Length: 135
Image 1 (cartoon, rainbow, N blue to C red):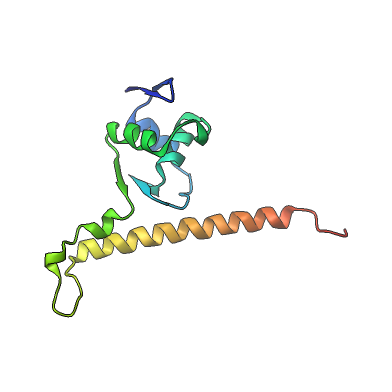
Image 2: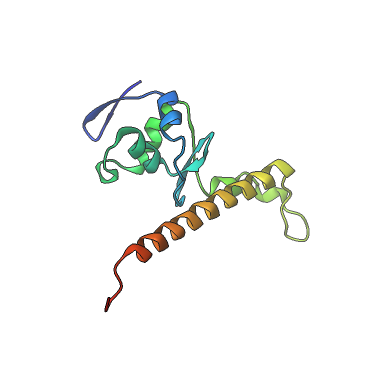
């Protein structure tokens, strides 16, 4: 499909995006995420990898727009909890939630934690590679 992002033309397909993200580690999801076979990714990470463009050259909303039009599922992080309506509350204040919803929330949380741990490990590796003071 053809898009215009930040005044630049972009020709991209869903299969190209999925293929280029193979082997990529998901970064920390802040507000939006894209569901890919490889996991949950921030949309700016996906579009930056797919285009080799600097992330500051486009917005999250532009990335979500492009990826959604390609047929990829893009959602806000808080949508995982908004599926439960207030009328579903039990007397003890807990909400009913299907097993699939709970598993989805756990899966999402694990992916976010995996990305955070990978980011910390990467930072530690870079710090350990720096020359130490006094050496």
